[in-house]
Amino acid sequence: MEYLKHRGVKIPLIGIGTFGLGFNANNSATEENTVRTAIETFGMTLIDTAESYGDGASELFLSGIIKDYPRENLFIVDKIHPENAEKNAYSDSCRRSLDRLGIAAIDLYLLHWREDLELGRVADNMEELVRKGLIKHWGVSNFDTDDMTELFDRDNGKHCFCNQILYNIATRSPEYELIPWCKKNDVLVTAYSPLCHSNARRLSVAQNPIVIDVAKRTGKTPESLMLSFIIGTSGVTTVFKTSDISRLENNMQNVFSPISDEDLNALSRVFKAPRKRTKLKTI
Ligand SMILES: NC(=O)c1ccc[n+]([C@@H]2O[C@H](COP(=O)([O-])OP(=O)(O)OC[C@H]3O[C@@H](n4cnc5c(N)ncnc54)[C@H](OP(=O)(O)O)[C@@H]3O)[C@@H](O)[C@H]2O)c1
Image (cartoon, rainbow, N blue to C red):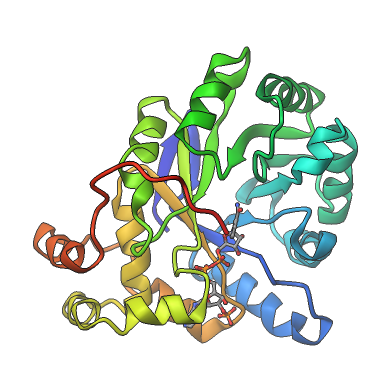
C-alpha cells in the first residue's frame, strides 16, 4: 500500500468500500474473505462504511472482521445520515454505529450528504463528538465548492478533514474547481465509485481501446488503471468495493505504478478533462 500524510495522519491511498457488503447473509463468507484479503494482502486498512448501508448491516458485518486486527492498524470511516444529523441525534447515531462496529471511536465521521442543514451546527456537533472521544476527525461527503465555502465561513468549519465525492475517469468535473479548492484549503479528497459504480458504466471505460492499450503496456488491468488514474491526481485517495477476491486482485494489479504524461494525454482525449464548472454529481 502507498500512503499520504494529511494533517499529520497517515492515510492509505486506496481503501475498502462496503456499500452492499453484509446485506445478504448467504454471501457473507465470500465477502468476509475478500475484505480480509484486502487488509492482509493489499494493506487496505482504510474501511469506508455508513449507518445507512443496509440500515447498519455493513457496520455489523465489519464488526466480525475488525475485531481480529489491532485497532490502531485500521482507519474506519463512517457516515451519519443527514436526517439523524438534522434531528441533532449526532451522539445517539454515532454511539449506535460504534456499538454495531464494536469499536470505541470512529477515525473519520462524515456527514453523508448535505440536505439543507445549517453548517455551523454541523461543525459544532461534530466538534462535540471529537471532544467526547467518539470520533477522531470529521468531514463531509457530496459537498460542492459552494457548500465547502459556506462550511469554511462557519466557526469550526475549517476543522473539516475530508470531502468524499463521486470522482472517476468518466466523471472528471471535480478536477475543474472542487479538488483544487480542497487542496488549497487542506481538505482531503476521497473519490467514491472509482470504478464507475455500475457494470455498464465500468464496461464503457474498461472496453475502450485506448484504456485496453494503456493497461496492457503498463502491466495494469483496465480497472487498476482506473484506480491509478484517481490516485495519480496527487492528494486524492479512493475507496472501491468488491465482494470477490479475484476482482480484488485484478483491481490492485500494478496499481501504484504511475501513468506517464503521454498515456494520461491519450486517456484525456477520450475521457476529457472539464473545461468549465459543472455541478457536482452524486449517487
Ligand atoms: N459518500 C457517498 O455518498 C458514497 C456513494 C457511493 C459509494 N460510496 C462508497 O464508495 C465505495 C465504492 O463505490 P461504489 O461501490 O459505488 O462503486 P465502485 O467501487 O466504483 O464499483 C463497485 C462495483 O463494481 C463491481 N466491481 C468491482 N471490481 C470489479 C471488477 N474487477 N470487475 C467487475 N466488476 C467489479 C462491484 O461488484 P462485485 O462486488 O460483484 O465485485 C460493485 O458492483 C462504496 O462501496 C462506498 O463505501 C460513498
